[in-house]
Image (cartoon, rainbow, N blue to C red; front, side, top):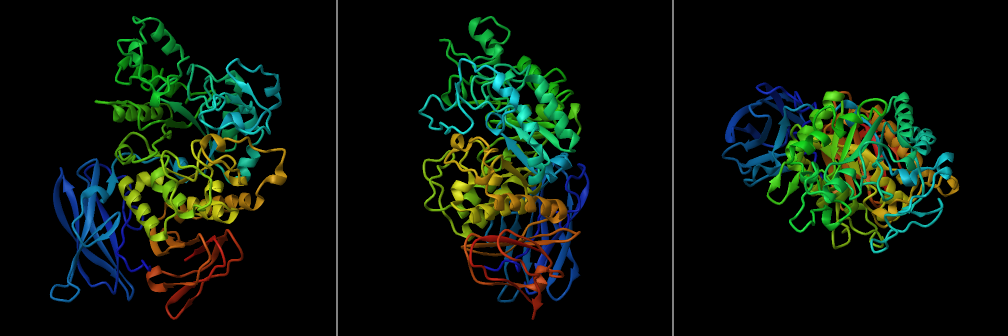
Length: 616
């Protein structure tokens, strides 16, 4: 399925004059159509206080292959929605009207759900958009020498570093098995992160909690002594920042642990000042996260709790952004449920408060919200900059690369991850990118797995297909986030199993080819503006191949990803805008330059899976 002939627009610099205009500005927008497409009218349709209005666009550039149209978009509302109406010459057999939205071209009237959008709210900081994020689960990453001297708490089941992970939810040891990783262990292995190409270190919670995951915090006033305490976190912050990197914390605003000092006071005394910080019922029971009594839910409609948690310089959000910890922002756990309970919904207020508070301490703070389904209503304003993009990235990639024999369990679904052909995967990519909006999607994290899901190696079933998934992670719009161990081929059938300790003393077991691929992909993303800030134009899709071009004024990159071997693919050089052909990288085999012959650029046939990149 050749796609280069399709009309195209996106939110990248080639098509949108300003990605974050000031309210009241008028910005130029551009549309590309094929010269062979009999389009003779292009209208920009936007909404003015929810009323549709149309603005004419005109052709501004034309050659034998392409016509560029330009119009002006009045940014009347904080988030301006728009689409294009394409008309063909009346009286011809091709006479037609089509809508161009962020989800593609439609020959029927479609709702505004997939319209393009431009936001007047400030974008995420550059470091958060251009970086490579590395997720560390502290208990399983590395142990410093000091870890051996720390006593095991009464709630924990001690484990040696090479012990098998207990991971079934029915086993009470799953949350209590303690391997003893600590923060100084992270410091000791930052050279490894540098080899991978990391620039943002994100750790899951460091607050004390009676579990190995620590999402059931018992206080927000200090770092767990099992991790080395406040001093160790300060050392990690210093070491990360000395390398010019950033440090991201993990904060649960939806709930605390049932051993948290706030909850203990509230449960013990109905007159406690913190009683209304939770949802207590008349019989003394309380609301909690997904039925887990150890995770009582916070009532963020309470003004006093907001002041303690998310608002102002004395809040939890603010204090950890200041020295000596100086975190550069937060990943907010369960952001989708935060401030929501039945008829109560203060989620947007909380998101705005978190971001406002963080930016008051650090103007370039980043705030990412966890949301494992449709985050579109939560990420185009002045709250979360983006999300962990399970829906728009992980699920489509998993469903394209999944080995039918994989034992990987689905994340939050009752049926296994399906295996789908390229055209259906393309539809998912397009619709989710449209639903989120270009900028919000570009600021969100491309994740192949996390501490909550199966490992990509287990999903893909082979090193080669794993590397195909990694290639998509680094080349599609969004910020790549690796879960520690992805780069060496660690496996896991579900989230808890994926939290296997890093095998530092068994480097002979590492997949060094995959490690080298991650490093090469990170370097390519760093070196090419197109892979960080470029547009996305699909060129060819079939069941086993996805081909697209990331376009940028400084130069474009063509990406060919194959989940299986396949024949050569011909692309129209003129529509591609072909001018180079220099190889960038290959995850498998050799990579020869691309050349044009008779107006055609031919991507070579492949014997097996792989990803190949060229400058075009």
